[in-house]
Image 1 (tube, helix red, strand yellow):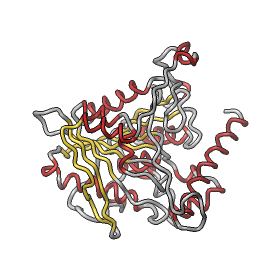
Image 2: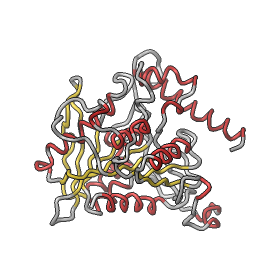
Image 3: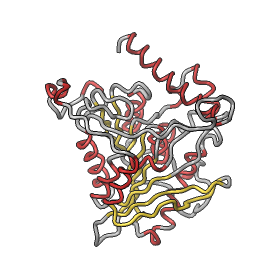
Image 4: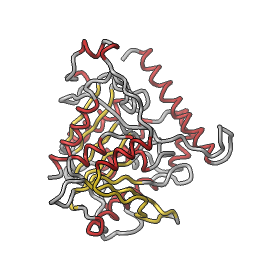
Length: 352
């Protein structure tokens, strides 16, 4: 990478962390940014490109370069509203249970939405989505924005999405404890909900990708299982991490100190990094990341892939050519529909 491009990436990521810091401060009521205490809405998730090995140089396009480089060849669809996306999701489901309280942590009732597929004759296997938002904003409605949700329903999977406590009011590891409590709660209520929770797949975007990677690499001995349903396991059987930070000791810069303090307090960032806990019995991972991501550098997923492979864990790194953070550019290779299929096929393979 050229020095100028590295500088652009560093400046862009720093600006986004600054935005998260302003969000944190606004939530505390210290500055006026629009409406005091308001949070940005969760960002939508995304598209990519596949690489067979650990190197970004091994990108294998599945769409012609000529078509990608011709702006006229890119059809831009109108952006559906949030309500339209929810309506589409509901049409793919046989039943939906919304705003279920899955756990209560620090007096906060944590909610989830659960959608069941139309496929009959089997008890559906469960997949769980964890939203992004820099650990400071977003909610379970982020599920409506990601194309994996309707595709997984069509493939016969049940799909759940969780709220979790957010910084700065609740510091890490509160978010991780909540997601793990959600997994345990879903297992405890599997018969009531009509789902098969013996095998669970999780996927998440951005900071949600970071959280699902931690769910995948940590067991009860890590100390993050807290709250209710402790007789159930929070271990999962397949993980899809979409452009999430992985090594937090190398992710934040010196200028990010206010945000780091708001998120972690004095918590050790190495203990908040998935690679710290890798062992050979971890579930298989699919990592998806754009090579033009200016928010979370591709090197984060590259390092996690290398660590998983070295630790004997089945892992695949998928690199999206020209893919920014959120993987939402029409110029990305391959098209999003193809990548959504990749996620569905991964869960089909590892959650039989």
